[in-house]
Length: 338
Image (cartoon, rainbow, N blue to C red):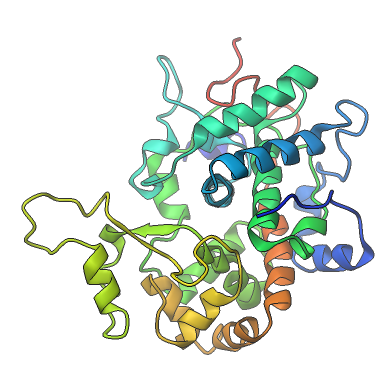
């Protein structure tokens, strides 16, 4: 069980249970490990739960477009480390059993947690103490991806709910071990996502890294990516090594200069043009296990969206906490008072 191991640009249509989406959904899920989750978990206890999350995500996107990207990264960071249990959202507090995962070096650049609080507050007004923060993260990531991708499979993929929230943050060692860095090899990525419950192998990993189609990368992670074809842009964005002030942590480059806020297959076209921003990205186009999927996703945006949606749902179901292992936090930043 999971409890003790933790210490060692438009409104999308409502999600519907389309048979085609269910077929995609089944392909990357892992079965028994997520038996505590089910479709429509809140149908009786909070019937509008998923609608409220979608409404809040949409409103926040129109006010602050980059929030949708933040939801995706937050889900990856939460689910990769042992379980999708919202441990990522915990702040360090006096007497806490662990130090916040948000302070780990691997979490550098993560932001917009205050908007998770906004979604949770809306749910608390409707159904106090009912919807978990872990479910908020999962649903917000799906709905944010749907907005960024323009709907399609990303909007119609069903997501099971019923996750519980952890009472303790992961150790920094667990975070560093579970989340691959920007120089990871394809083998390391395959192993990491398999450990996180994503069974789709090279195809699923290739699809999930398509999240790098949106957002930005801090220059501290780009030292190995100054290709001649991309160098002029990157040199203009990133400071020199002998700069008087160390601005590498605050300067950044867009992941995709063509469609920087659209979740689409331009990411794969960039890889084929040798313009992968991170080393881990470019390796997908070079490794024989992932290269065929890069080529197919570059040629077919619908295929990318289908595979991404299915793999994202599979990741969101990683090792949910069982009864007695977690709780439904009223404030996502802190465990409930004893």
